[in-house]
Each structure stands twice: as structure tokens, then as C-alpha cells.
Image (cartoon, one colour):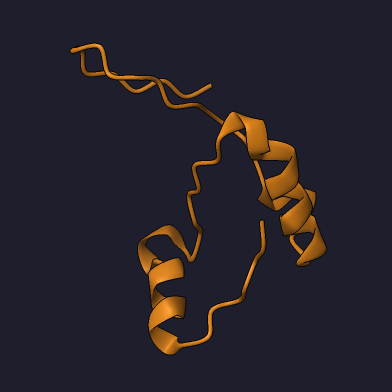
Length: 68
């Protein structure tokens, strides 16, 4: 994995949504969580800004949201 900072104003706008105060929700395969967190740390993100709070499950026909 490699992180490249946004290069254009458009890329910055896509990554920072003012409706979420500039936050970004990212889905990461559970097999790559540690690598992703290492990339964040290498690029200056504090641990408290990378919080795992849920998971995705295959849809079973029911509508649900589960956050833990």
C-alpha cells in the first residue's frame, strides 16, 4: 500500500466533506487493518483519529445497520 496526498483541489474536496467536518469514513479489509493503520501513523495521523467501529456483512435480504 502507498499513500499519496491529494494533488488537486478537486481531490481535496472529494476527501473532505464539510457535512462531516472534514472527516472521512474508510472501509478496510480486516486482513489489511494493521497495514492501513501503519500508513496513517507514518503520515502523521494520531491514533485517536483512526477508530475502528464496525464491520460490513453480506446482505441477507434484511435491512440492518450494526455498529459496535
